[in-house]
Structures are given as structure tokens and as C-alpha cells.
Image (cartoon, rainbow over all chains, first blue to last red; front, side, top):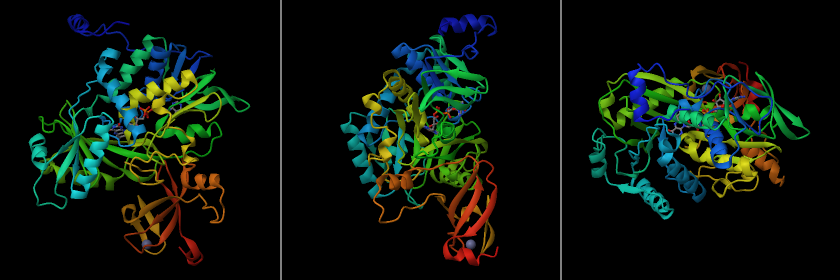
Length: 419
Length: 91
Ligand SMILES: Cc1cc2nc3c(=O)[nH]c(=O)nc-3n(C[C@H](O)[C@H](O)[C@H](O)COP(=O)(O)OP(=O)(O)OC[C@H]3O[C@@H](n4cnc5c(N)ncnc54)[C@H](O)[C@@H]3O)c2cc1C
Ligand SMILES: [Zn+2]
């Protein structure tokens, strides 16, 4: 595989861009691997990459039922941040942030990772107090946080309406300067290329339809492209976790599947050079390098496996966007779509061994799994290689729901729609 | 999505509040088995397909209704009143 560089770009430009090599091989499934990863989303691909790179486990297959990147990795609004308040979450997401900061170099693939800052707006003095507390807790963990007053916010985000003539005037905000966005497709492609380089087989259009078991122990999978055996089978299927676990006769999970929508407007000249979130409703907005405004809000609100959303959320999100940025009112929307997410009952993820012998589970990513991609892959690979979690994911167990150790970042109780 | 309220007739889903999975059964209050309570509070079947769920017609008659909905197509095949009113439901 050739390295990408300025030189390779010039060389290929001179031959009319007709000689670029395939980014990863179209592998045929072999009958046996050391590790099978079910799900070729960002997390599955990152897991394969770190298994090969950090643990020398290279006889690995990633099985993807559709095309690579057809799941949530290609559907999200690309926000990356690490400003969590529970120590287990802060440490994990900060590890992810550090991996992001070196990822383009590590993978020799441009992630277009842009640390343009993430600003959360506050609309009441109470919310400002909560932000101050959150910011201080974050600073104590060694992560960056900055409390902003309205003046500073209008300076940074000129299009934002910061006047008083509105139902929820802005009184300030909390910023994570190192937060930002990345190119979601590049994450899938970069990890796929990186894993392929180490010999990992990436097998697309290969759906897992059942598990092969010896007693309780999982020893392989049945797929639309034949049976494949492996002593370690790792599940990383995001919104499809419950359906895949049912194939292994695990009928209940602390997860519900819900649809989240994303929206993109027609391209504009540079307008918003950071990420802004509305604090009196739910809206997050940023501008892509192509110029489109990318935004999203709440879940549709009821269990869904349909990768499309409803109209009320569309209206709600558009209304919130115009409340914040009145100058967007006459803008046309170009596209919108939905993705199915694995909403866990405490809003935090699961990365663990089991629940059956021979099985490993990475799930429960809710809204926030894109920013987690590097660390989730890194920790899941560690867990698979060592048959034990790393300290960074030791709290992300499945049995925490049975022993009172839920990680409820939002303090919202058992409810599958944590933001 | 339109849900047919037994009192008010067909109404837009945004008039309703979604409550959730109606298949889970709350254990008896005197039952101290932690595992049963954890199952009740946290564990869900989360089916792809037919799902029995609680909704409330909050912007209408405020009745609680049980809805049988497909989680892939959103097709609604049954709506009934909850609790003792179920028997009076003639819709
Ligand atoms: C609209 C939207 C906006 C979002 N915005 C953000 C954001 O701004 N920031 C953030 O951090 N997160 C965000 N997220 C969440 C994030 O995208 C997900 O949590 C994350 O991508 C999930 O991990 P993944 O990439 O591995 O998932 P996916 O890409 O969904 O990968 C799972 C894969 O498993 C495959 N699969 C399923 N069943 C089988 C089977 N039986 N056999 C084989 N393969 C199977 C699927 O086809 C899929 O490709 C957003 C999500 C959505 C939908
Ligand atoms: Zn009614």
C-alpha cells in the first residue's frame, strides 16, 4: 500500500488521477480467524486497527452487512468533545481526544480534524452556575473548559442572536476550545485502510445471521457468505445491538433503539467557525468545509429501527436554529436523514467481555459514539486481546445495571434518551 | 404518524407523549428480589417489528393508551384504553 503524501498527490495528478490504488482489499471470507468483529462501522474498524497495531493480532475479519460506512459512522453530525463530568467518562473521552489529535498522522489519512471549539449556551443564571460547576470539574480532571460571557460569545459567533427580545435570551456559555469536528467518512476509510495494511480482512455485504455455539461458548458466526469460526467474536453493531444479541439467545439488553436525524443546508460562505449548542432546547450546529450548515437535535422520541425521521422534530430543530441564528430563516435545506442509535438506559456505553464466553461487546453509544470512535476501538481491542478491560473502560460494564453502578452523566434516571 | 385515540379519533402523534415499552411488568412492591427490579427498570426486548407501548394523549383527552406499533414501518395495528377503562372501549 502506498503512503499518501504531497508527492503522491502530484504524481497522481500528472497521470489524471487514474492510477490511485484501492484503499482496502475486497477480501473473501476465510473459514477461520483469531478474532471476528461484527459490524464495520467506525468502532468495528478502529477495533480491528488497534488489535493489529497495538496487540499484534492480525488474523482478524470485520464483517459488515452493508457497505462500509453505511451505518451511523456515515450519518452523524461529527462533533468531537471530551467535556464530561463523571470521572470514568472524562478520562475515557479525553483519551479519545488525545487519539484524535494524532489520528491523521497515525493513519496517514486526513481526518480533517478541526479543533474549532464547542460552545454550549446557557439561558438562565441557574444554568450558568451548573456550567461553572461542570467547567471546574472538567478542569480538575486536566481537561480544558472556559466560561464565556455574552459579550465574548457574540464576538466569537457574530451571527448568533444575543439580544433580550427572545423567549430564552443567552446569558453565557461553556466552551471546550479543543472540541470540534472531524470528517466522519474519512474516519471509516482511514481506519479501514489502516487495518487492511496490517492484513485485516474487511468483508462487506456479509451479514451475521446467527452464532455458532459449543454449549454456551460462542465459537463462530453464521453469515450470508457462509460459516466462519473464531475463538473470539466481538460485537460492535451500534443500533442493531438488541437484534444481534437475540441471535445469541440474549433476549433483553439495557438498550432501546431510537432514530436521530441530521440536517444539512445549502452551502454558504463562512458563517459559523465553531460548534454551538442551544441550551434551552436541543440543537447543535456547525458549518462543514463545503459550507453547508450541519445540525441536529433531539431523538424522534419513540423506539425506531427506521432510518428516517418524522416531521415534528424537523420543525422543532429548524425553529431552534432560526431562534439562534435569525439570518438562517430563508436558507434551504439540502438533505436530511436518520440513523438508529443504541440508547443505553443510563446514557453511557458498554465495552466488556461477554456476556457469553467467547463473546465481547461494544454498545450503548447513544448520541455520542462518533467522538468516542478512537478510544472505543482502542479500549475494545485491549479488552479482546487481554480478556479483561483496560482501566479506561473498566466501569463500562454490562452488569452495572444489576449492581447499582450506572454511569448517569445527566442525572436523568433510567431513561433511554439521555442527551 | 397518526394515532387513533379511542375518545378523540385520529390525531397527529405530536399530540401524544411517548411513555415506552408496555410489555414490562412491575414486580410486586413486597418483592425484594433485586434482579427482578433491575430487569424491570433497565432491561428491554427492544424488538425490530411489533412493539406494544404506552402513550398518553397529553394534548387531547389525556387518556393513557396502549399502542401496537411496528418499529420499522411505524404502522399502528391497535390502540386501546389502559386500565379499567379498557372494558368500556368500543372503538
Ligand atoms: C444523526 C446522527 C448524529 C450524530 N451525531 C453525533 C455527533 O455529533 N457526535 C458524536 O460523537 N456522535 C454522534 N452520533 C453517534 C455516532 O454516530 C454513533 O454512536 C457511532 O457512529 C456508532 O458506532 P459505529 O460507527 O461503529 O456505528 P455504525 O456505523 O452504525 O456501525 C455499526 C455497523 O454494524 C453493521 N451491522 C449491524 N448488524 C449487523 C449484522 N447482523 N452483521 C453484520 N454487520 C451488522 C451495520 O450495518 C453498521 O455498519 C450521531 C448519530 C446519528 C445517527
Ligand atoms: Zn384522546
